[in-house]
Length: 192
Image (cartoon, rainbow, N blue to C red; front, side, top):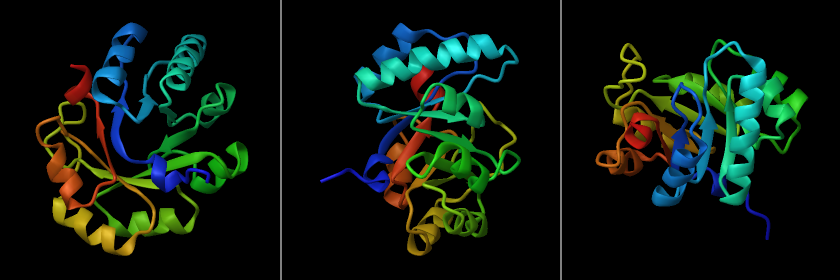
């Protein structure tokens, strides 16, 4: 029986730090914490470096049976044959990503603290939605807060997986899971 996207978007979702890639370090984190999903997020203009780093992470994820998601960049996702892309509200649409990447691609959408955005994303074919910041975040200190009660409400109305993000650590992650998150995304909680 094939594993569905719903079954894949579970557990620990690592987001790479926004700095030069340390593949060995990331490999150790994936192994030590059973990271199920890894998102490549490096906000630089050097396309060649991004391609090289993404290819290295793709290989690492294949070796460790970890889903590989690219942040924001549909073209890079396609070039490295990543499992999918994560898009913010100001990026391309789910429809554009689906057209370019195909129906098998995982497409995640940031919904901040708005269930309406999540319902819209689900209707347009998103694979999962992300809510946050659930807790104060070092990465995005000005991120809008999303109460855990929003996750509880969303879980009753949304049929695709929910990813919690923002200030999540190994210590507080169970609060997010208990609220209804299928996966929890961590950057500083894992890599710093």
